Each structure stands twice: as structure tokens, then as C-alpha cells.
Length: 170
Image (cartoon, rainbow, N blue to C red; front, side, top):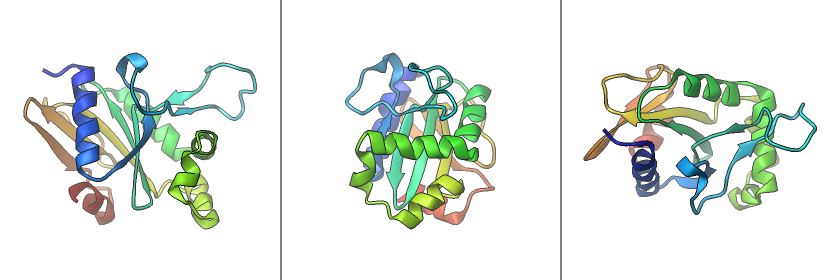
């Protein structure tokens, strides 16, 4: 069974090999060469991380953002967090704000129209979880990455659009 660091490294390599631009995240142990992506609750005005959300990997491809949480085994808390971050307008606004603060936003050349789409709709956010291949799958509106010693198996939830399937099979 792979530990969280091994899963993280494998998924980082898989994303790069499949032409996803890794924007940031939160690696196990907090050390890596990618920026930390921390979404701060817009209603919390004090300093610090209280109420913030951090995602293990945030990647970008052809106008879509991939939010990926990784664990050795399936975690319902990761499902809940990703549903909140992509499903609630305040977190989508916080996400775009974080990209701007980190100067990632300019690099992506996002139009004003797309910024509006990103903050008002969840249609350009792909929720994904990755863990050891134990036979368990994520929800049908998620992508599930099942990892083993020698492979990464991608399972596209039945409630996802064919475009998402295309993005993950290129």
C-alpha cells in the first residue's frame, strides 16, 4: 500500500505527463516546489488560516480546474470539502482571489467572461480524489484516481460530461 507522499508524487508525475498545468496545492508535510493554494473564507476578516480550505493539488487544462485530494484510503471528508469548494460561490470567489494574489491568474490569461463563469458556476471545476486501489470509488460526480505500485487507473464518474473524460484521457 502506498503512503500519502508516494501517492502525491505519483499523481504529480501523472498530471505532468498528461499535460495538466499544476498551479499549486498542499503537499504532505508542506514542502514542495509548487505554491500553496489556500482559500480564505471571505467572511473571516482576521489574520490566520481559520476556516480556510487547502487542496492537495490544483491543476488547469483547457479552461478547466482540477481539484484533487489524495489519501492512502477513501476519505468522506475530502468529498465534503471538494463539494463545498466547487459548489459554494464564496469558495469559488476565494479561489479566484487566491490565484490573483499568487500571480497565477495572469499567467492563465483568463478573460473577464470566464472569470464570471468561474465565480458563478461550478461547471469548469473537476472534483477528484486519489487513493490506493482498494476497490472503493468516489461519487459519480467525481473523478477517482486508483493507485497501485505500478499504475494510476482513472475512473470517470457517470455524472460527468464527456469533455472531462477527454481532458483526462489525453
